[in-house]
Image (cartoon, rainbow, N blue to C red; front, side):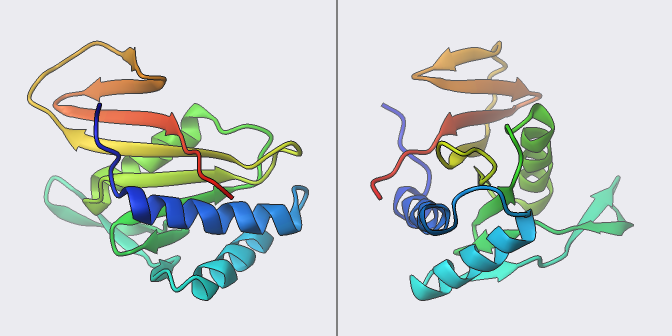
Length: 159
């Protein structure tokens, strides 16, 4: 069975997101959830940086544009919040780019836009010398792009 990347840290982050969702529910704009999760991360003692700009380079040249992930927790996990009806492939592609350019290996997408529950996904970027087709591994989609694999799976935690 594959090991869960940053298991304890990601469960702690997910717990903070679930608590914010349990208190606030859905229906607010994204910035409201940013503030709530920020407070919850502080209360739980989870180290994070909020909206810290990260440089993008192209062919070893720095671009004028930067990207800003919502949160970087524990200096190694990107947390991005959404308030949409559903997470889309564009949201996942954005996380892939964040991981690729930041050098981090784990991102968590948390969507507060569903009335029934918080929708969350773990996205793991790993380097692999093998090129494999897209397939399902234990309920997680695995995408392989030139020696990189992107694994998307639902995050479940006890609340």
